[in-house]
Amino acid sequence: MSASRQRWLLEQIPDWEREGWLTAEGGVRLRERYALAASGPGLGQIMLGALGALLVGSGLIAIIGHNWDDFSRPVRLLFAFLPLLAAQMFSWQALRGGAAAWVRETAALLQALTAGACLALVSQIYHLGGDWPDFLRAWFLLSLPLAWVLRSDAVTLFYLMATAIWAVDQYDSGLAWQNSPVIYPLLLIGLLPRWWRQPPPGAVLRWFMALNAGLGLGAAVSFAAKLGSLSFSKFNAVLLLWSVLAACFVLLPLNARGMAESTRRKPQVVLGGLWLFGYGLAATFADVGEDLLKGTDSALRLPAGWLLLVVLAVFVALAVRQRRWAVLAIASVVVLPLLVHAVFPSSSHGGLLAGLFTFHLAGVGLTLILLDFAGRPAAPRLGAAVLSALVLARMADSDLSLLAKGIVFIIVGVAFLAFNFFMSRRRREVAR
Amino acid sequence: MKTLPLVVFALAVLAQWLVPLAAIRQHEKVLVEGQLVRLKCTAPDPYDPLRGRYLAVRPEATEADVDKELKSYRGPGYAMLAIGADGLASVTRLERQRPAEGLFVRVRVRYAHEGKARFDWPFDRYYLNETLAPEADRWLADSLRSTKAVLAEVRVLDGRAVLEDLSLDGKSFREHLKQRLKTAKDP
Figure 1 (cartoon, rainbow over the protein chains, first blue to last red):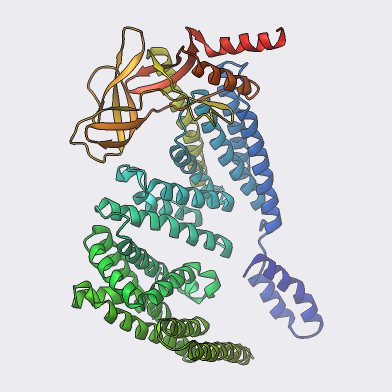
Figure 2: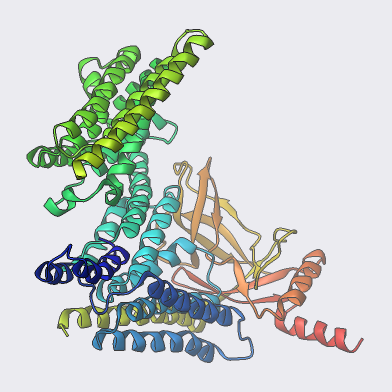
């Protein structure tokens, strides 16, 4: 539960006790269960702290940017290190004194900014070239430990964005693998100590993580394809690799607590699922299906393709063990081109693949709806949306008259709205 | 307070000092011990010779001979330099492997094809004070239009290059700037 909702709940408890809706013992238990940590920061506090640190850091960078020509090189170098030293001392105090969360955030962000400013000034004094990806890499690596020890979400966000930008930029760099996006998974794993023996990340941070990890891992997969002598022109192969990656996202192993959380707090499932449904829907068109089969053939010649499939297989096994049928249904979309390619290696079966995709997506849509009626974790509205999109895609692809298409569109739209209405009522009844 | 976070923090602080200090040591060594090399500069982008607070510096040589077997190569390379009778350096050849001896600078090869390669120098800007920047911009544009060459003075040691100064007619560009500013004040 978010801090604001917790705060609201705690504010209601005295009223509920007064009106007799809640016993005194129940009130105590609720207060214990949803107690806000003493150092628990409000979002406003954290944002103001981060803004202050950003302003101070930006001011320092601007002063440094003036380039104090009148001073000697050693004096200018001193300018670079003094703010860093001050920020480090501030962080040390925050760390040792067990400071409030917003102070830790401010200290960590300020130290990260002054570390970047120090590197920038050294580059300026020695007139180093404009190779900004190298600068960015040094900066985010030097900032990473601050996210761990000061438990800073602001530095975590910076690290996530910086690593993703760096990985995407390095795709076309022509560098050796150790300086390429291939190392992005390691950079991502490097962030894990941030949550060691700490509460899991909040919803906003999770979305940031999922989006940036998607970008960074996508760049890593594309570069791995390039290392395997597969040019970006064979886009369909890269598309398949990205789709396997999306399936891995959807099936990312979770503990019992993670599985019990709402879909809104699982952005990896939402983003991966959206990608896979887009991919599946496109594959219901025969010419696209043919291209995808060609891409499957190219992708399976790559070591990166097989590595991704091994990861997917492990994730599938874990999901089956945990009976996560809904996510398994979503991820199954990516398996179809692999199966068709295994049975019919020639790429001339695009029509067959398109037909199979149509039936498969219809099955996935129904599964997502029926699982809800069976009382299992599901996504009935997403299932209905998939079915509707499928009908619309088939109609758009058909030779029917505009009148017939229009009528079908209206019927599907009304059915979708009615289903949505029905599900809302059902939810309310179940809640009672 | 647990020890591990403090140790990690101390290591992070150490790294935040060591990385810039290592860069400083490396570049100071080149400036002190490196051989002075003068490279003729061409006109930078005429619409953007000065971006922000630095002068865009482009040595004339951006292409050199390379092994013909090196096709479509992109990545690090080494520009072999030779000093001519006029005291100016020229690039004689590009090597992919680090040479065992000689005067050379590590560069980034952009593209190699048919025995020729285009490359980027490890320096492309000269930072300067923002109050001097507009005059420096005009000086560079005027100088590049004249017949005399603007030279990038670079210190080179073990493949590393550090841009030390820009000069014209044997004088540092700073001296030219001072002269121009003085003339502007007392015409």
